[in-house]
Length: 325
Image 1: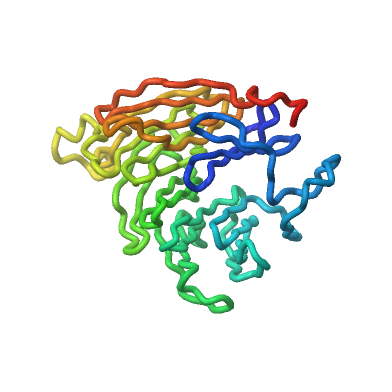
Image 2: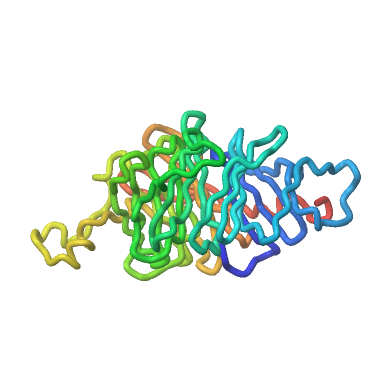
């Protein structure tokens, strides 16, 4: 998220099973449990050693040093990925870390990258060298120190702005800088599975996330709207009224063929946010969590017919007093 920080929040990120989120602030890092919303404590295993005034009990567990700024870090149980603007490093983790892979990338100022958490699939995805493309690397089948033909998906015509893998690593979702469409592709066959339309006006997407069973997808943008799409049963998604007209021209046809969200809700447009799926309360009721940089927590429940209502609101930054941090 590139917005100016509000209340000192500089970055937000869910963990891989979306049960917790990390809030990076100008004064340090906080980790919260999502349901129920509560602070988990201030334990940080890897941090910037520029911080001062910490007690001696705080121990530096691991340190990586690079000559250029680190833009993103991704982790799974056995690997850690460090993203720089034009290069990605993969290390073994956590015992005796050693460099396994090094990949050159297209200019990547946002540090875009995602890593599959599945034990069965060690898939890494990041922007490819060609504009609008995605490069996928199976870390399990790629041998360290060797080069192989890149596995590339030509997803967009303009630069990729957001990318996400589902938990099994079988589907990748991405959006371009235009931010009107989200395209889903099969990571094995490279075929496009579905095209989802966020809207018609350009927007900056902050976050794309799959539900745990890949039945739904949510996305947030600088328009202040969180959109929810159905993936398992795409008939639940809304369609353009022009879809009932019949045959249309090629340009309009692209607009008609895409699917619109089955449900949506709004958060403050001036506040960037991330979104993820919460625990299911019943078979026909699902929930989406939105965490905003203004310190607010939003939980909405939705049903397959598109009904969407707010169930919870809180200010997570007020849960712990700053003097205790």
